[in-house]
Structure formats: structure tokens, C-alpha cells
Amino acid sequence: MRGGVFILLRRALRLYRLHKGGILIEFTFSIPVCITLLFFVSDHYRFYEMQNKLKSSAYLAASMLQQIGNTRTDKQLTKKDFANIAYASCLNFFHTNSMFNPWPFGVYYVLACYWVKRINSNSYQWQHCYGTTSTNGTSPAEMNQKCKNTETKTLSQIETAYPDLVCSKDGDERVLIEVIYRKTSGFDKKKLGFFILEPKVSKPALDNNSNNAFIFYLVITPKPGLFPGKN
View 1 (tube, rainbow, N blue to C red):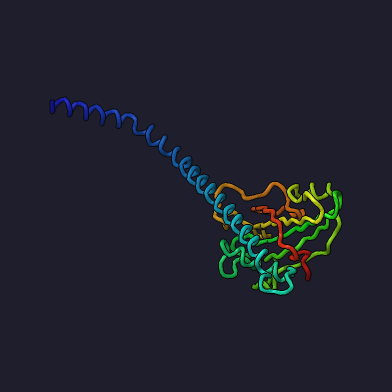
View 2: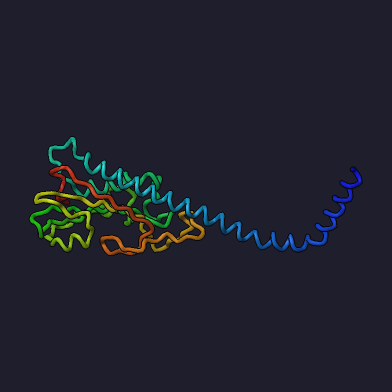
């Protein structure tokens, strides 16, 4: 019995010596494939992690938008409110002043709110308010912030902009919250932790800027008196 085991071991060793060159070649080719697969899995995890962070920012911004004026007599939102909300809502990803110049992650943060109010079946009031960390400032007071003038748009224009903004009856209001990680001029995907995948949004944002890494949209019904925003 013992002799048979030794014979089998010798045969196995002989086969290994005969084929060890092929085994080494296969192993050599498999290494880059395995590494690429690991990078791909890592990128997919990072992609969904970034999307979830942006989604959380949108819901946090919506909550602050509705509550920020609770203790004020004048509930109407201001451009400073949008800057403060933008700053606070992006802290789940950015830390210290990393959302500001020189943007170590290669992206800055944009909070854009598009308010509509139905006047009649084919006429809507429209306003774009925003706060972004695209400037050289290092605090919400120095952020790029603005409430644009109120415009009048047709039903077709509202549907083209974002179909969920269409209201069912006169006097109804809706707000589209658009949160973005937007690329800076020195963007490098490795700064966001990506090895293979290129974070890029195929459709431009509502302001027609196409230089976006991630976007998330959320539509809410605002409390009465919050809009239109003022400067």
C-alpha cells in the first residue's frame, strides 16, 4: 500500500516537472486579468457609493429647504439660504474645505433648485436658484450663489425641462432639486478613487453644463411662501 502511494507521488512529481512551464505561463497571463477584475469590482462599488452620497445630499437639501425658515417671520428663501444648504448638504462626502478650491477630489458641488408655479394650463412661473462651491471662496458666504429672475414658460417648455415639474392644477408649486458633482479643469478620476470606469453623465444638467461626474434629481412640493427666492 505504502509503495503504491510513493509510486503515485513520483508520477505526480514527474507530471509537474513536465508541465510546470505551461502552468507558469497560464499563471502569468491570469495575474493581469485578476487585477483588472479587482479594479473593475472596486470601481463599481465606488460608483454606487458616490451615487448614494449624492442621493443623500439631495434628500438632506430637501429637508433643509423646507425647514430653514421655520423660525423666521419672512419664510421666503434667499440666495444665502441656498449657499448654506449647498454647503451643509455636501458634507457627507467632502470634509473640511475640500469642496472648495483647489478641489482635491477634482470635483466641486452644485445645488440647483428649479421652482415652478402653474398659472394656467399653458403658463408657468419659473425660477432657477443655486449655490455652488465653484469659486475661490472657502465658506458659504463666498460661494457662487444666486436667485435668478422669475420667468414665464409654457407647458411644453416645462415638460422638456423635466416632466415631473408639470402641475395638475392652477396655483400648484413644485421644486426640482438637482445636486451635482461637477468636474474641475484638473479632473482626474483617480482622485475620486476610480481605476477603470470614467464617471460621466451622458445628459447635460438643466443649465446645459455637460461637465458632470454625477447628478441626482429630486422633485418636491415646497411649503407655501418659500418661493420665489430673493437675492
